[in-house]
Length: 287
Image 1 (tube, rainbow, N blue to C red):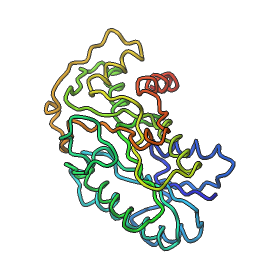
Image 2: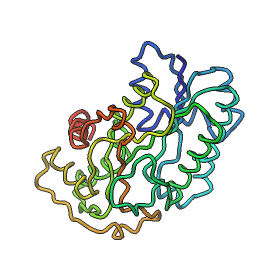
Image 3: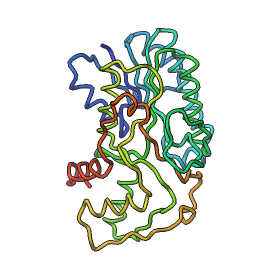
Image 4: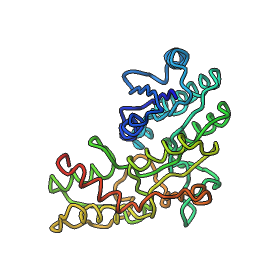
């Protein structure tokens, strides 16, 4: 099977390429942002028509939530228009599609984790662009998987919460984390493995939540990082999310539940605590 991956240079992209490259049934074509500009429809059409993959895994996106809020036009150009071009071209070539979406398509008003059938209502630009992408996927591509995940960590080039927090620990800066933001930490290795399984086993088309088991606040997440690295001399100060004065609003509750996988008896992702511990051990020398 020919598989094309966009956004292959990102956190999840690197994990996914690593997992797929070990599969003998895959002929992999991986593109990072320097090799494929998804906002150029001619590039997208040329790539798909020349390779003719059976499936495209579309990861390319602007994922810095605050940058998206500050530069909404560029966020829509990449996350919405780029996805529209991918979908249009997949439809024209009868290619199946995997689209990575986000917990941020929900508004946080629910007091329990979101399941696949809950109604999206994004509150920031990033969430709005990712939800716009979902709607385009559903409109153009019959054979599709929409995979929603959250709070990613992993790889040597992690640029999200875990890496930023560890950098503050390393630099002996004050450690603060929000007590009122609740989510589902997810290891890119586990997410990548499940995406490959979904494709390989031919799960029914549709939307899936894929996160590690459990939920926590940013404060609890930070505390567990310190526990894993055995850095007992540091303490995290619990603060409200308003303390950070970030450009983009965050949903208080954005945790996801792998409800469809549970109904299918396929929800075998491990607890986020176990995944975090393995990640920090694996990349200890680079952290």
